[in-house]
Amino acid sequence: DTEVTQTPKHLVMGMTNKKSLKCEQHMGHRAMYWYKQKAKKPPELMFVYSYEKLSINESVPSRFSPECPNSSLLNLHLHALQPEDSALYLCASSPGWGYRLEQYFGPGTRLTVT
Amino acid sequence: AQKITQTQPGMFVQEKEAVTLDCTYDTSDQSYGLFWYKQPSSGEMIFLIYQGSYDEQNATEGRYSLNFQKARKSANLVISASQLGDSAMYFCAMREGGGNQFYFGTGTSLTVIP
Image 1 (cartoon, rainbow over the protein chains, first blue to last red):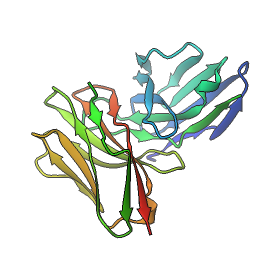
Image 2: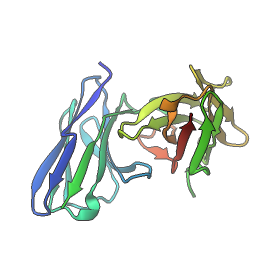
Image 3: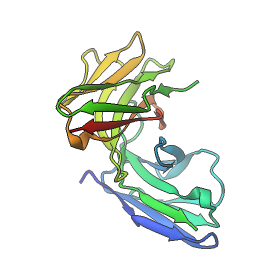
């Protein structure tokens, strides 16, 4: 199983809503990532989890709250988002550290904030 | 300084022709990996090809090959015999040493013309 799954595929939420994005992998990977991507732009790194511990937080606003409940799951909790947070949110995983190790991406969640 | 530079925002190629997408990188690490990803309009990032800094041979994967020129710090992607399904965004990325982070270029939008 070389798949990273993400749910939901699409999400529309109001600025006062609370929602969560979910990411799952069963490849035994120890590094998991959240990216935000605007149209025609490269992915922007938000968070990195390493062995279920947050290792990188790229100064992301507190309205985004990551959680790694176990080695297979990664959540991104959303609260009081702004319209400019509308984007494609990509989850990725990697077996671990080491420059030879690629990232495996999920299909993404397209988020629209109204 | 940008870690990864892609200077071609958009490229066009005739079906069945070959095309080269440029990528230059900047690092002081001796150990690093270079990756190319394809992102169709559906949004999923698809891994295409990898080149390690110590690899002496250029990487090849089917119709994809990587023209690695270490002294010039370039890692260009060559797609041979272009197909309509190759129309997508292409991102070059780098991972340094034992780091967790991937650095992405700004991407090249490739359009294959029938």
